[in-house]
Amino acid sequence: MTDDIRSTSPAPGSPTIQLGQQRVPGVLFMREKSPSSGASYQIQDTGREDIVHVSTDDLSQSAHIRDLLITQIRAASSKVLFCSFLFADEDIVQALCEAAERLQGGVYILTALGKHLRAEVLELDDEVDAQTAKQRERAQRHDEHLRRLARAGAWLRSAEDCHAKFCVVDDACAIVTSANSTKEAYEINPEDGLALHQQFVAREFGRLFAHIWQQLTSLESLPGVSLDVHSLPARPDLPWRDLSSVSDTHAVTTLRRYENSLLDAAVQIIDHARSHLVIATYSFIGMEDHPVGAALHRALTRGVAIDLLVQPRNHIEAQRASLAWLLGLAPGQVSIYGHRRTHTKSIIADDQAVLLWTGNLDAKHGWSDGIEVGVVVDDPSVAAAVGRWIRNVMQRSTDVALNAPSVHELAEAGSQPPLPGDWELWLPPKTDIGPLMNSLRHHAVELMEAPGQQLLRSADGLVMHIKVDNDRRRLDVQRLQETNSGGTGSARSRGWLSGNVLKICVSPLPPAQQPVRNRKRQRP
Image (cartoon, rainbow, N blue to C red; front, side, top):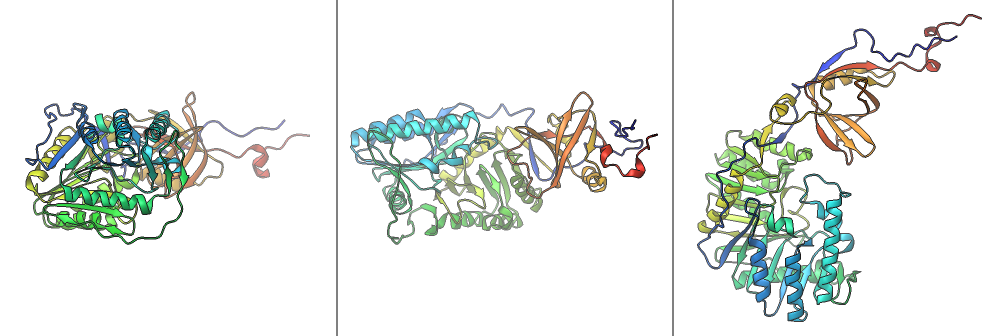
């Protein structure tokens, strides 16, 4: 008979790794254990009739933005221009349908049509997963609303890279807001905007809308009994005149290659700050090598304090790194606040001037390409009103920022580590354990899950595809890979391993693959 020397027990003296003190790179957010209960939502008064601050708030679930939009749409006497890549709010759609029927062709809508919808519907979610029921339902609602708008007589067009959110009514009022046309944006997410009852400014935003409509759209659905999306033919490239300013109000935009006044405005307002910047953004990515990031660096060098409100997204490694970069420039001057629903975007310098826009502090989107809009107001009363509202959201932050925390610190802050206790980590035969041991000793380990697979990912990019045997407390590594980009596809984090002792074991070769000298001979 042949002796099977394959063992299911670790070899004597198998090395072990204690997990818990390893640090997770970048800024991570953990839920506030004692969220502030003293802050109360208030509509902020700008002290002006021609510029009104509007907001949505998670505390009161106010519908201030929606209410003002509907009021303006119902008052329209000639035309409504509405830009939002998503239409999933029943009340706004109803108001636009009524206006289209009343004005007989005076409602023009820039939105995502057909293939342009794609992942834009995912922006407000904590993690991107295009297959979730929530996103499918939102996309379906968007499509149904477009069909209603078409039947009511609205004109529909789509530019693939248009992320702007604004509305112009009768060349008399322009509303710029961070909010998409969704129930969540109008009732739950911290969102805000400015309603500009200034004819010149409204006309400038109307001119911008017309240029996008005529020159930059590629899909269209004409008013009719049904939604009928078709491609638009190529059109002659017409010249564009940059947006003009009046008094203390300046319309700005990113308009593909035509205009980048939004970038100039962001840099200028940061450069003008002498003591304090209040900044709100959905994402903060890639600022390290970006003109806006350079302006932030200059501000910190001047001694300017920065309060930053951002949505916590621990699964976005680039955001964790960018936030750590900002903190590292001047730790004593930067305060970071996390709110799980915030979607607002603004920069306030010394409560003297404010930029409110529709993009994000994301180096890859909305600064040199795409379509975004914003408005700069050089008025202390308006800037202070927006600043008060942002600070109010900061007071009610849902998450606390931790810079390069250890896994043990994350656990103490409330994180629930997966796979608690001691485990054996079994590696494929002939695996050189040296690189693995070095990785595990110095880098935190994260459990990732995706349909049909589980992964262990070290913070230095080592990925182990594993099979979990809970009964034997054993993790069998099916495959190892090294990647700088994560290599985890759509896998979602289940947390960082903490308090674990991993015994590192290497599986022996099957008997048939054993060298002859290592096999026991059979007697004839």
